[in-house]
Length: 287
Ligand code: NAP
Image (cartoon, rainbow, N blue to C red):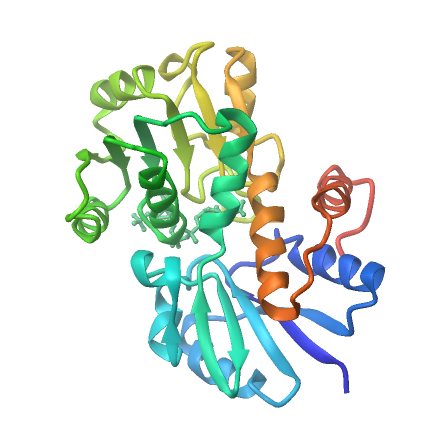
């Protein structure tokens, strides 16, 4: 029987991962089928047990399970250990091993704008799995001033505690502390959205974490939300002639790393990026 992998999350209506993976597997003759598993939280553990048969090679984990999945795995490695967030499970000798390929995706996406430049000050909206991966990637690039804005303050404080040993100034705000957030945004090298705000299917598609007064033409805006490609935040940034990094770049790079871990094959960025772009722009069906 054909081997299989897939994506576990909730909701998943917005996800182009199955189309992107199955397209590249067919193109490269990789004998793997990539499935979509939209699972409610109370079924997460039993679902993992059900799919974990001899043909299962691994899975991607997305919102909201990157941290919740950790307790069901045999081992976690590398960036996943440091961030406590897993976006890729690899089955190896009947063990389920957790990795975090979001860090690689973020690093490659940042290279598009920053190349090898140091990023000293960043504002991150959100404090979930993707935010932790962003902090990890930014600390590697010399970050020394971090501002976290999150709906639930305690989650942001817990995240900061995780990175306590690291020498980096930090502040935490909730969304209603607008003057402080505005001042931080206007003086930072980078603004990243890692919340679900702007995401199709989230109920918040038309919402941006900030308004146009928080940015200027020197701002660099990285929106991890990739569907739609032009989120409210990206539209505001474009109106201000700011620099943008679209979440689709990260999506493709983190997928490439997952495929490498499962199969040893390193697929082409351009092939996968173009396929996703066509789907997201409505030129192709999201199968
Ligand atoms: P997560 O661990 O579930 O974290 C979700 C974050 O969103 C938390 O900070 C949460 O705040 C915040 N949030 C949820 N609902 C909100 C609301 N109504 N208003 C304001 N904030 C809200 O999810 P994740 O894995 O980090 O993913 C977060 C986002 O990044 C998603 O949009 C996902 O699609 C995107 N992402 C993209 C890529 C890519 O490759 N482009 C990769 C990973 C993630 P609380 O702490 O208050 O709950």
